[in-house]
Length: 347
Ligand code: KG4
Ligand code: ZN
Image (cartoon, rainbow, N blue to C red):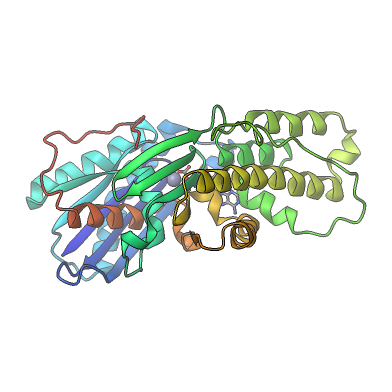
């Protein structure tokens, strides 16, 4: 079976072709997997402009589809998977409309996929998976748009335990990056700075918002503001000082990671889960991975930790195709009559 998948929920246009053997119910063959990033376009503004992003998706999606189809060897498509939400409404519609046109033309079904669910299953791209060994799990999805702690009782059985009350973790990275004059997106730029040697430490410390509150929610806007105030308090020379920038990056990143880790471990203990699953762009951060690995091994040695291959942490359409495949395996062959973009879709 060949699955063609589309992801246009934010600023990346992503398409992929995968081949799955229904009888073996495992091995997934990636025939093509393309991403057209709009980072260069949005860099100038330090954020994403939905209408500009929509225009780029409209321009790129048909071209990318042809390219991916050729790379895959022009296979016959059996199923189309498309992200329907959550995300930016005008961007989602580009993918949804393209999927609908193609579905009409080829007379094949569409599986509408939740982007957050995609980030979860990005972990299981090439695994011979036995979900009984994985679930129940606590899943932390941390991206530019979302920060959620989810209890996954089984495939398709989700309960959101907590989420951010204001900025998402990735958004916090991006806004701090903008304050410090770093390149966009802020996450990778801050990570890069955080590894550099600091000759003269100033003893900067930032808050770890809501860390010890008895809930699973997050809040990152106070941290972003703390960095902004600290920066504004400095003279011009300090604001440009390499050591200052490096220390702010290191400490801000540490605050974000510590809060995410603390709440994830708390949830995993409270719900006595078999696994912790990470997903979303922020999990591309190597310091976050290392910190989670070390602490989970120490605190919860019997719990499995999954994080996606770095290339599948950030947005991609492979994760959408994989998720559709698991839905298909789950015998969800009855498709909704109406497929539409759903910008505020919840798990
Ligand atoms: O999942 P994603 O590609 O898109 C959304 O669904 O939002 O996540 C993008 C976010 C951005 O905020 C970006 O700064 C962050 O992921 N990010 C990182 C790293 N790489 C990407 N944050 C911290 N460290 C990184 N290495
Ligand atoms: Zn995402």
